[in-house]
Image (cartoon, rainbow, N blue to C red; front, side, top):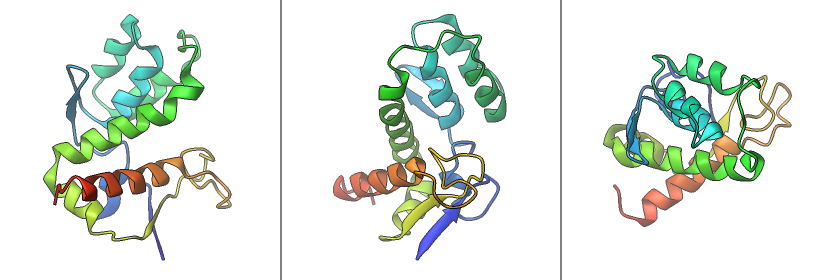
Length: 149
């Protein structure tokens, strides 16, 4: 049995979305959402990083991060999974309430039901890689083994 999530407004699993408003401090800065952190890391070492970090809404961070007028870091394809893992782990280490929700999922598969996303989500037809769901499962295991309960 899998748990499907997508919108940050869905209860109880909306907190699995990168748009959920569960901020954290990472790399010496406060990030309002994991989406802000993830998108900003595409331009690490440039003023674009701070610009993305400081926008109000995660949808704005996503829009800015996807603009290809900005200088995408050359190793992004190799780095993006590690960047996502780092952000998601920090988010769940920071917030005990959502950490409990993640740990309460037991050994169930977690699936980002994102119809347009075949990398982070399962895509429209379920054939996507679901990397966000897989990373959430990895983070769940890491939290369990570090006795964060």
